[in-house]
Image 1 (cartoon, rainbow, N blue to C red):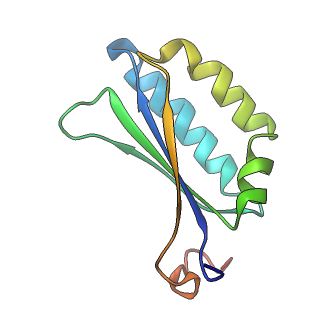
Image 2 (cartoon, helix red, strand yellow; image 1 turned 30 degrees about the horizontal axis):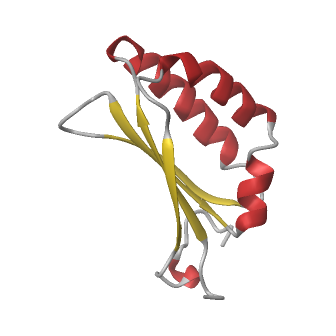
Length: 110
């Protein structure tokens, strides 16, 4: 799949009292992540039926971008900040995008 990106879906279940602090920390992490050269997209989604459940949708140019992300200060700060907010350990799935990369016209960085 040479014309694909690496999408990483992070599933998070937070404690009810941590909803707003988690949102705040995750939005800050997403904004900083979008400045990384290997990051194509970073979305924070919250379940409509259960506000304590989130999905982080991270899209990287490849595995190197995802690995570099984990070395950044903003990721490490996010990880350490949100760890006590978790109702259970977060899980993730990695996927190859199917939509052609040429259609990912986000902000001219494609």
